[in-house]
Image 1: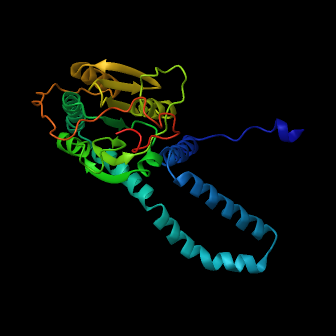
Image 2 (image 1 turned 60 degrees about the vertical axis):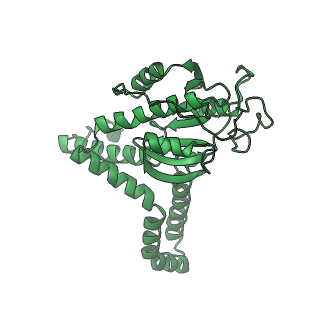
Image 3 (image 1 turned 180 degrees about the vertical axis):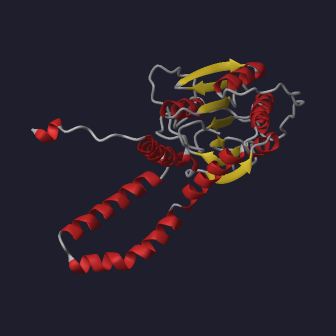
Length: 290
């Protein structure tokens, strides 16, 4: 009874600061690995650590010797396995400390998406561009061809050129860089969607249902520009409306730019396979929708 009536230990300001710092580090670490392949790997590491702890409690001499011998090598192995995540974390920390993130350059980069959408609309070239926000898209990036190239109008025009090998699938954009092209995306199975929507539009809706990403779609059949957000799609947008919506959703000013002159493709005409075979496939497939 006296234990319950004993006064609580005094908490100093240093103790509170210490707890907050540890909580911030854990939170940033969880935000870093969210949506990446590092999560199942960490579960495996936690399982091994639990086995080591049980072995020490049970005084398993041989197992303890084996673990003590391998631990130095395991540390280096973890560094190799998680090298991309570690590099990404250090890059983010450096950019925050030096304030190197240039808002104007990112605005220019996203304006290239608007310009490219205008070009695709004029030429009726099918395109699907996904912009990552808070939730990571590494699972879908790994399904495509990694690029890690600076986002630009010329690069988007080259990727989605009908004769280009990467024009099938989706392009995923991370900040001001193109992470990958020809990516596979999940299709939306929402029965309320219009039957006029093809696999490209359903893939755009599907990725926004599962994540907080933004998807810009250009129809190969009509050249209409659409924008998918949070499982909803806005169709038949003008270039100015698309610029305004991206500016509002990304909370940054996207300056108006001079639209390029139309460029006519001299290749074979393409059809947006909106109702073609495979429209009910569980994943966005290049063979189904170009």
